[in-house]
Amino acid sequence: MESKSGAEVWFGPNDTRNVGAMLPSDVPTTKYEAELVAATIAVRAIPPDTPVLLISKTNSVSTSMNKHLSIWEDKGWVGVQNPAPAQQLAACLRSRSAPTSFGKLTTATASALCRSAEELARTAITDGTAMPPPPNNNSVPAVRGAKLSSMTQKLAYQSIRARKKTPIWKGTGEVMVLVQDAIKVTNGHTPQESSVWKSVRHKDFTRQFRNFLWRAIHRSIRVGHYWAHIPGYEDHAVCKHCDEEESLQHILVECKRTGQALVWDLASDLWVMRTGTPLPKPTFGGILGCGLTMVEAESKKKPSGLNRLYRLLISESCYLIWKLRNKSVISNAGAEPSTTEVKNRWIYTMNDRLETDCYLATHSSQKDRAGIPPALVLRTWHKTLLEGEKLPKDWLREPRVLVGILANGSDAFSPPSSRRDRHS
Image (cartoon, rainbow, N blue to C red; front, side, top):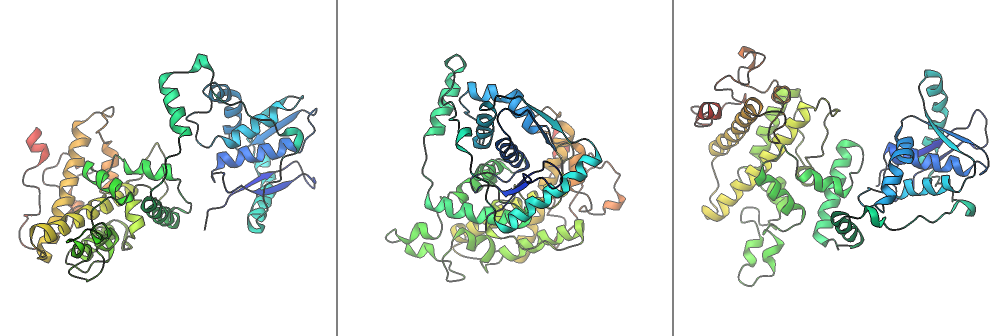
């Protein structure tokens, strides 16, 4: 089921030109694209010799048409994501003889008038009303290609890559659908494939997990079906513990081998400390798309510590399950780790990540790519530390700060030596 969005056009009370339309299936469902589509519908409904004032909730359309349009066209629209709505609006505006100006809603009265237009859009989405077709006199072909004076080697290479259609592997496409469906459940909208690939390189992930994530989405990890057609190795495709195909999905969320369920239980325990609610057991698609998951709203100026904690929990736990499986199958000839070993290794992993965060927050400048704002680290690990009520508000430089889950036995789960001590 694909995410739907609507565009609304409001001329005035009881005006027959008021219309709401569902965005076409090939248009991304963002506010910016919806405003471009709405502006195109409005322009098409007005005679070409009549001046037009387009008023929208943001300045995005005005900025695109007045500031960015000439740059985009000089570069042949190379590098512009989903250019079709902007191209259609630009073609409609150029076919008019009268001027077009833009404005932005600034008063509560104007905002109230738009509620009726928004109701039109909601009705259009419910009824499935498609966007009205463009009249013939506004169907102006877009200029193709970039200006020679604006052409660079980089731009030419990007243009060639954009025109070359790279076939998508069947396995990659299947996994991508799982990721997009999982993210839609948590975020409320379906992410684009480019967003999923961008999330693979999220700075909160370790290099090892980024490589693992990239290979997992491409289904290039040698498990399960990979061995099924290799003579003499067919038995490698089956999980010796569960007698089922040992796919990556089976390893991460289904296998009954000691480690998988326990690791997710430990992650849930830490999540309970922070939020008071258990962590739902992640799905295969949710794990691979954890870089996009938003458990609470955030802004660019103040990133959410809770979202970051979720990314760390899922990524570190997932990669630990993978390492535990490899150790059992490859190194220990199928022997399972004990529950104590699994718990100690998980707590060691999280403590090591906590130490890394503290070091990067206190020994790196904000301009350093590896640096992390101290406030973000404090928000990330809030309410998850051992005896956190006894720690000062700024505990980043405190020695022996640990996550609030104890291991069985002594404190062997703690990193053997503090990064802050090693680098001080």
